[in-house]
Amino acid sequence: MILLPAIDMKDGRCVRLKKGEFHTVHQVANSALETARRFAEAGAQWVHMVDLDGARDGVRANFPLIYEVIQQSGLRVELGGGVKSIPDVITIVEAGAARAVIGSAAVTDPAVLDYAVNWKPEQIAVGIDCLNGKVRTAGWEQDSGLDYLEFARQVEAKGVKTIIFTDIATDGMLSGPSFQQLEALQKTVPCNIVASGGVATLDDVKRLRDMGLYGAIIGKAYYAGTLDLPQAVKEAGPQC
Image (tube, rainbow, N blue to C red):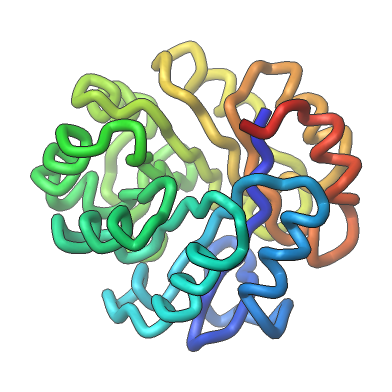
């Protein structure tokens, strides 16, 4: 199982949120590049990056710092947040990101997803962010009304191979992932599934691994020190 330690960017800073709520923002590291290099030293081969400003208002002020990580960290960068248009997808992929994550646009502008999947299917993921089983958009602030399992079926039918599933209620809470929802998603679609939100302990990593998940994102647990990343990478297994 691939582990993707996370770097969320806002106003040029490395930050974390609780449940995606912007008023809970707090800085957790000084340099995105140096943080990514520490991930690499721990044995990670991927990093999950989110441009929070891009997700909320479409402004890509953080991209120069993200580009440094893409070019200089030695990690494969999975980037989401504000991937709202076809030019956004092209920019991210051509900048060298290993995977672009399409979130809200997969709901609000399906043509973006159609283009991306037809162009670079192996480098595209859909982020399904849900609260109480319903897909949220616009930086998690709007309820689309879509059931997350039905939406997963829709994007899989378009050719999406990777889904990043976040239960917003667990994100940043160190309370454990939403195992039942992840299991339901596994039974619904054959996509590679990345668990996001709530991963807090080595036992969480082992359970997700034993479920056969493709990947898991490690966020607050790394910064809060509840999870030893080198040990977690070892337990997760091969990282490619």
